[in-house]
Image (cartoon, rainbow, N blue to C red; front, side, top):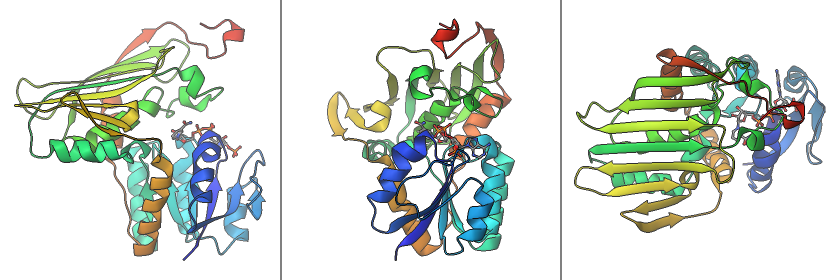
Length: 318
Ligand code: NAP
């Protein structure tokens, strides 16, 4: 079966990843796009500036990928589910946990699929790490997620607004790997959030985590001010070994210093293969574990004000 899919929000991730992933999968057809700016790829038969019009005018649409900023995702996803369409949610899946719970409920009532995508989880290195860690006791976890916001989010203002998640926009990718590979549930015990004085979202965060194992040292550091080489690493040390190092956001895995997995980027094609399976079976897949950790980090976070940050160097920024 070929699923007719629509995209809402034709920004960076829709163009860079969703479009090629849909193009490369013969079981999906991009039928419609709703873009406020009126952007559209050639193959979309229908384009709209208002997604509600898309839902009314294209009744044979099976599913919709919502690629907007998270602040508006819940209201849009509700409308899409209530119009009887399946939903794929970009990460983070909503702005709050209650909104996500509401989408899970509506999907159940409507008999539709809702799928929370956590793209970093779709790396084979992550699966191998999870299998290697199963049943072990973790003594040390160090997550280092440091990147250059100017490079990865050029001109995006929503990430700096409340509900835009700030450095947790990439940091939640690390948390989505942590929740997938750790053999025990993980909790946030301490959180320090650095807010630039001119922004409503953090530019850096340091977290202390716990699984309840006494003496274990579990930490995560996120920073958006890293220029030069970018770091997306997770090290895990177990009692009695082994020592794992996931790097390149999960694409490379070393176990006790030996390279076990090194692969290219296949995250979004994998997401659409998973979506296909869910659509065929009608199963809802809502993984809220990474989202809960991010929410907890904000809930118990100590706020520290740091110097103003301007992402446009031409306007006198850093
Ligand atoms: P973006 O480039 O700013 O694109 C988001 C698009 O959503 C906008 O271009 C706009 O497109 C639409 N939009 C903006 N405000 C809207 C509103 N109020 N109502 C409806 N539509 C609105 O951002 P992005 O980087 O693609 O990120 C979108 C989501 O994907 C985020 O949740 C992000 O975490 C996730 N993501 C991003 C990346 C990445 O590398 N950038 C990677 C993985 C996941 P139109 O004008 O076409 O409507």
